[in-house]
Length: 134
Image (cartoon, rainbow, N blue to C red; front, top):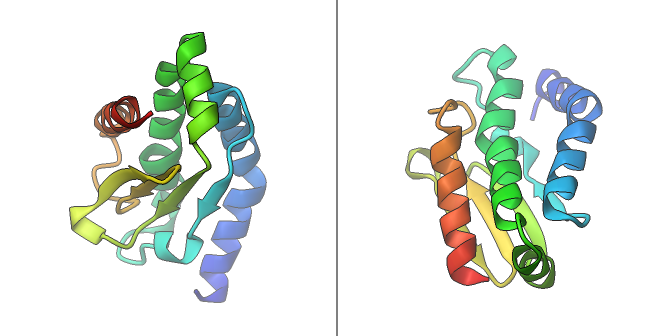
């Protein structure tokens, strides 16, 4: 990752991450361990001004919405807290992208600047996956 990219990541971490992380924790009802593979989220094919929007819409908003749906009752909150160990955001699978849950780890492996506005679809995928696994 070059210096320019590192600066954008640092800017996001300082300006956007605190409220997004708080929203994830609030939705889950407990502090969620996040593993964000920043270097894989850098998409040099698109204008860097889209990175923040992509990271927010592809990774954070669907996760927040899914946790809100799962934790809408006591049973869901307890199941998520008992089973979820961490959440991983990365872009390794590329265009094929995937969301999976295994051994307590929810992984959102998607391109950060592709189909950004399909937040609802990603949310539904996470909810369905977690409801079937918890």
